[in-house]
Length: 288
Image 1 (tube, one colour):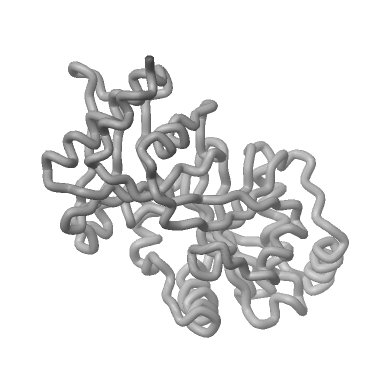
Image 2: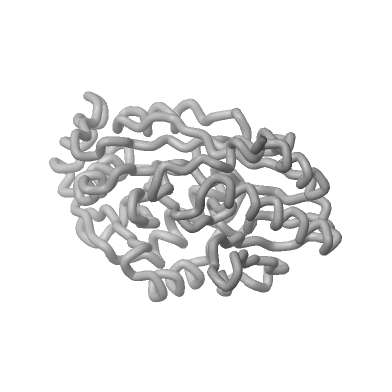
């Protein structure tokens, strides 16, 4: 996370049992509040997969007591979407309920499961055939051109925003994590028609950034690009198509939702909560 350390007051924590590291909290501080890091797409408390539930409760209580002693009143926690879990693990839902946590955010992601049996719908198949007739090919170059002339322009025109990362930052991260951050482009000759930046983890291939030119409907370039990527990563458990919310709330872009569903994706939430650190005592009542 050091590439954007100037934007955040880092407050990441490591939690030990005796001398053994058992949990991590990537975080940043803002006055009397700490966030499970605002510079990360997802986060929350990361735990050792051998930790028993009783120990998990003890860890979370110790965390809240520590934060309260440090004059931090509120912990803002982004819940880790279950698709990223390496093992069955949802202790945090129980803890959030016990602590009377307040939900502060609700983002919607469309996710394709069982990628090995993927079948796009009739409209997507038609677009893919058009891309073949138009001579669209998939490559993994021209990220700088895609960033400046496709992605940035589309985000500015539609949402009046910029990408969270700069092109320099994303290229730096790609050099640090070459197996986990990938870029693919759809081209006709030397012309870049569409592109996608992927974050690749053990279970998930996530479309972090994807966009196409105004001609993408006519030439099926973005459809062809997604089709290629889904087939390439057929061995993964999930393909995440990214957020479909218009403002990190229950509002969803209807057209975007349909487009993702036409590849077979289904909706799943990403929730955010606020926890009063003083409520740590409420965890004492879980076990009798």
